[in-house]
Image (cartoon, rainbow, N blue to C red; front, top):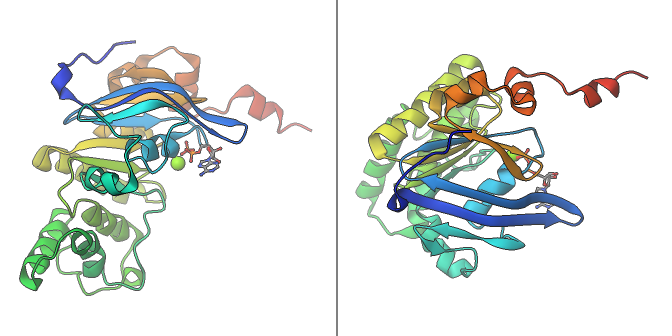
Length: 262
Ligand SMILES: Nc1ncnc2c1ncn2[C@@H]1O[C@H](COP(=O)(O)OP(=O)(O)O)[C@@H](O)[C@H]1O
Ligand SMILES: [Mg+2]
């Protein structure tokens, strides 16, 4: 499979031999992964294969049992929670369940990370919130409650909140799941826009291949805690690897089908 060749100073994040177990379940199994600055890397793989667990290791919300995590060449997996505050500020995280705080307005949701980290005056805060909402096309909805906007709009507000502190990296965990194809494409366009306009390095977990093909510079496929494929989107369109084909083309595996016969 084609390797992504880039100069060393373009490396933003590196996982070296990362293993993670929960009880007897090995979720990550000596995983090596190097992420280039400015690229969008898409991580695909079956449900339960460790994609969300992988994302959480990048911001050390989970710590590896063995192996190391580096950000800008600095080892981060051993840092204290206090030290991690500074690291995490440089990441935006669009969580899988991407929930907004229902008791807060849209504007307060976007303002939340800002007021946690700084003490902007009211006018500054208002301007920043408006700017972030403008970025996702929702300026003007500040005073709505999350219950008064659509699911697609909620995702976009969550994205505005994720970029509130001008992160270098945005982690997207299944950003299009649950959206219709048109609304999903709005999210894809936003991922492209953040890369283009804010030079965001993106890591996108998805099983939406339309989205993967559209936003990826590189696609990494995870299976049983290891990377089993790594290459540009075009490679996936023609790969003959049966595990890749089955996932990309959406075919059930024979064992699962056999289990349907009783
Ligand atoms: N905090 C946790 N404690 C125990 N098991 C977990 C935890 N987080 C994830 N797992 C398990 O690890 C496996 C991988 O989970 P996850 O990364 O969420 O999968 P996915 O690829 O669908 O995102 C699953 O079997 C899940 O149940
Ligand atoms: Mg997940």
